[in-house]
Length: 446
Image (cartoon, rainbow, N blue to C red):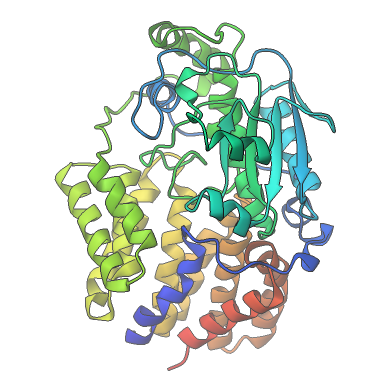
């Protein structure tokens, strides 16, 4: 068991990371590992969050920036929206963008199309090294009132860009990595384009959204599409005060999502900067001991705050992820608690699958093959529906190792072959995919 507790850190590559890691092999990015080829038609599950809660969420997502600054009025595009791709386009950029735009038209009912001329939303692909020289902490981002990377760099020398002052959106820039895995590139497109079209804030307390800095969700969800549809509803308009939006939202959501009526909102306490700083520090600290200390601080804050939402579950997850070997029993208990809590939350299935990934790694190290099969059997369909190639391939490889441990080599080898394209989608190269398989095989050694 101790070996699994030590090596489970290797599986943390499936979990949210600040650094995007080494550049992928762009030559593998053919249509064979596009989201459409691997996952088929999108199958976003309808949100389980009640409408009353979504009203509260929209007001917090849409009328406050991540910095904590309030936005006084509704900010959005009015009328049809155009989008342009430019820069050093990755091989699958057009395919993945068009797939997202098709979903936005069908699910969020947005009038949006791609064009080759300058557009309302300009997506420019920039090499990571170039991006990091100007914005060191960013993997991708969206900014208002500029149309290109060069124009954005010019604004850095001036007074800056302020979303809180934008009422009617006319032009925004999405900056995305030109040299990322398919999954990372697609994740950036989904989060930043959806924020260009909707609310700008990210909230750790909501489990089922791409607008959460835990980064579990890598494609826009059923929850996100409903919020975008409400945000752009014809009965609202740019410049409408928050109080008027709050008055109209219940009726809008009742018409758009009748199944969400009847539930109640859970009052949400503010997420203090101390907890956010502890979480961000744990994810970025260069020393494992420092990461664990900060993860422990985040968990303490969550418990003392009385949270019973995704913030507590994520705190438990981070505590387990960064715990040193001598805290193995505590880490395992934290993982169990995180899995149970995510399982009780609306739209919490995908975060729970991440917790189950780590639990399965522990079980594999203890040669508890039937437990590995149970956990991966529950998590694999969730990862597939969420179109998460990194998570899905890791779960498949864990399952294959458990099957091999039971002597079923034929099924194990077939599952490893099936996992390969998903690993390329998520990890970006044959070398990275092979390294993930070797890490998992090492967990199973007695």
